[in-house]
Length: 70
Image 1 (cartoon, rainbow, N blue to C red):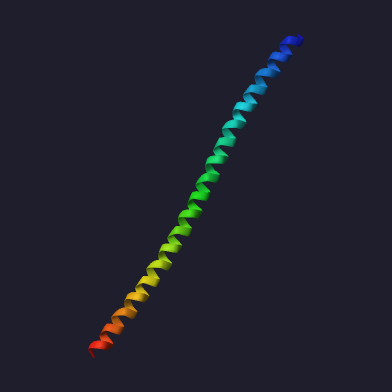
Image 2 (image 1 turned 30 degrees about the vertical axis):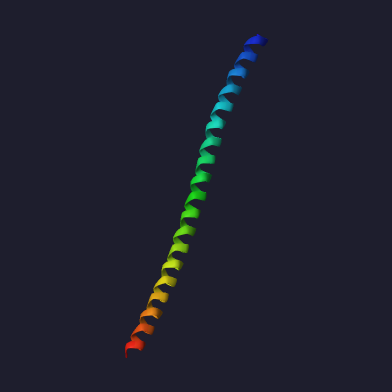
């Protein structure tokens, strides 16, 4: 009887560990996706700022060229 209980407990423990390892992997993957999304957002914001700065620089340059020809 005792060996039967031990075997059942052992099986349930193995099932529990396997199930929670899968959940831990899923959480890990979700956290990685979240960090990836945050990094992509930061890169987009940086690119927008760089593009705006470049537009401003080009506008300033063309205004200076226009003043020189007028």
